[in-house]
Amino acid sequence: MAVPATTGQLRTSIGDMEIGDYIACNAGRGSTIALTTIYNLGKEHPSGEIPLAGLGTTAGVGGTFYFIKVDKGLLISDRMIFNSITWDQLNSKNWIEGVAFESGSIRSLSGGVLYADSSGNKSNTDLGFGAFPAINEWDKYLINFPVAKILSGKSLDDVFHHLSNYSWCKETPNYGTWRDKAGNSTTTASNNQRIGRGSNARAQWSDINYSASGGSYATWGFRPVFEYKEV
Image (cartoon, rainbow, N blue to C red):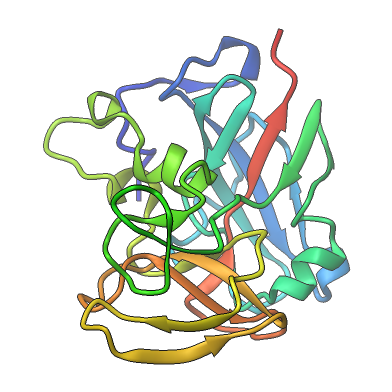
C-alpha cells in the first residue's frame, strides 16, 4: 500500500494543507465498540497502514490511514477504516453526526436518499446519475474529486479505494421500491435501513445502496470525515 494517488503532498499539520494534500491519522479496533478509536492526527502508526478493506473484528489491531483535503475545513478518509461495524454502533459513538476530535469533529459523509435522474430529481430507478439530493458529499467531494488532482496513470479508486466496499452514510433511504438499471424491482427501503455508498463493481447498480442499520458486513464500514473551522 502507499499514500493516496493525488498530486498533493503529505502534511503533518492541517494548517498547511491545500486541496489534494493528505495527512496521516491512526485508528484502532478495541475489544468493544466503546474502545474502538481514532487518534494521533498527523502521525504514522508503527504497525503500518490499515488494510484497504478496513480493520475487522479482531481486537487490539491498529494502523495508519490518510485524510485527504477536499474543501475548506473538510477532509475525507482515503479508505474505509473499520469493516463489520454497524450503522447503529457508529451512531452510539456519535460518528454519524459528529463527535469532537482534535480541533474539529469526526463524522460520517452524507450520501443522499435515493437515485437521481439526469436533472438531479428523485428517481426510484438507477439511471447512473448518482444520488438525490445532488449536493450530497459523496458525489460532490469523492466521486467528483478533481481529475487534475489525481496522479497520471492512476484512478479515483487509487485515491479513495471505494470500489470494493460500501461506506455507511448519514441518511435513511427514501421509502419505497428501488429498481436496478434494468428496471427490475429490488427490496423495499424502510425506516430501519441506512444508505451506503461505493462498491459499484456490479454492473447492474450504481454506487448507492441501503442496508439494515444493525447489519454487520465485511464489505460495509466506516469512512470518517474530519471537519474543522479553517480561517
